Length: 115
Image 1 (tube, one colour):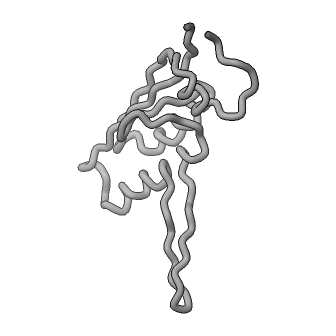
Image 2 (cartoon, rainbow, N blue to C red):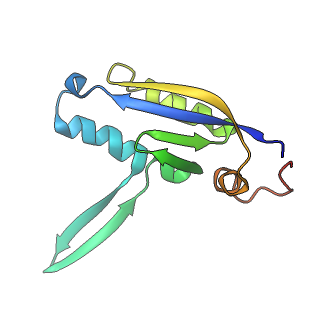
């Protein structure tokens, strides 16, 4: 089975470089999104706020390791550029043979994957 190229992204936060827990949370919220809770008139409302990884199809391998289609890598790199002094990251080209992972990182694309 022949595989297809994809990118493996890994990152590491440098906790001591963040000015505050709030700033570090801002990084994670931008990347993964969050749930906003609003209390009004005795009721509780929750709203899901998407992060970048909600917008980009990916497969999470571990806490800070993802596989994504190569075409989406520039968006991720642009996000990390804004955090370059506080978060280190690396991108590796990998060959994916697992059809399920290929479907996850390339949803809705027509055509069969190479075998």
